[in-house]
Amino acid sequence: MKNKYLSSLLLALLFSSTVATAQINVGNQINTIPANFSTYANFYLSDITGHQGFAFLNNLNTTGNVLKQWELSFSLKIGAGLSADYNSPDFSSNFELNGGMPTLFGTQSPGKLVFRFIDEGTGVPVVNPFTGDNLGFGLPMFPGIGTTIGISPALLPVFSLGLGYGTEVSVGVLPGAIKLATKGIANNFSISKDVMAAFGIRHDVFNWVPVLHDRKFFLSLGLNYSLISLGAAVGADLIGQIDAPSTDKIVVTNNLTGLNYKSSNLGIEAVLTKKFGFLDLSLFSSWNHSSYSLLSDGGVDINIAKSFYTTVGEGSDTYSIANLIDVNQKVSHFIYGLALQFNMGRFNIALKAAPFSGNYYSLGLGYKILKEKKA
Image (cartoon, rainbow, N blue to C red; front, top):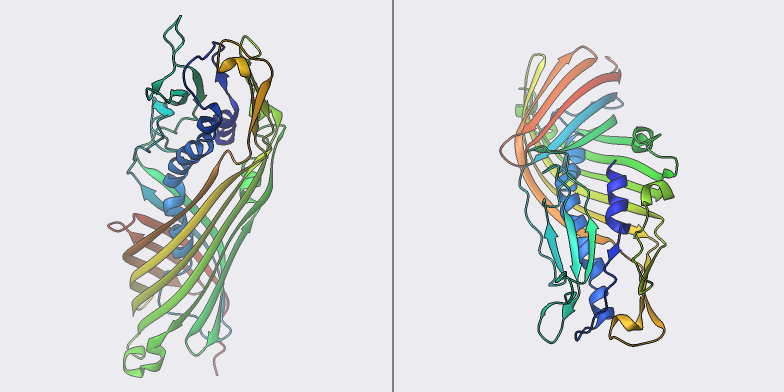
């Protein structure tokens, strides 16, 4: 459903068929469309991507007690970052937003991003002298899901291996999950690229401090990296019909074919743990840096008759918009919180939370495949 609305956002263009007589540079004003589309898309994306990066990173470790040499474990980590702050983006003078703010989790009512031609002599919108309506077009926006809290999920199966000397590496890969979840949404919609992965390495510095290590204190310092990559091909049944004006003054040709999303995340984490029998009680702090991008494939051609500029004119001008959405953003988070891991033989259950600094929560289920061999 989300992709359906995204296609409508990009492509459902409705132009007025009246004649403009004001002082106006149509080409320059049309060229503002990609930047404003990208602004909208970035605000819509920020609800989920702003927290998803550190959710993936912080899913890797729930205790500072690293595996011993050649111990191997498997765990399934389900985490989420929560957000509740929705801001209003700033658009150029050619645009105004009607209806709800651009947010995936906010109001359910779809808004409309309205492009208006501006009279460059007066700085006010050009209007139809017969109706008083602004000359331009409305771009229907996709709605939110109507919740007060945004939840950015992160599901990852993780394999961890102890290398000895207090060092452990972890790898998590989940290909094809989004493709499976969206199967059957539409006949002409397909995901061509779908990978979620994470890698981490950490070291227990208390391994070299016997007085603390023997008393079951552990302090692991780690470096984590995660990647989310998604490519989607958009077919005709999701693009929708482009509404043609009542005259041939404006003709819009759709050449859009899909979208590409990517998020990469780098984190540094410290986990201080005290072991009490079967319970590992930990305090953690983590700095996470995420960058994400959304690029559209293909573009849109807008053909405008020369008589649009004045009451007379022959021929037309074509304006091609190749990068309708081009979002590149970076965000950093520092979070801290508490983690609990209940160890029951080979099995463990882990909880991790940062309720006051980023609102991150996770639940993990683990199984130790290979245990340390006793001498």
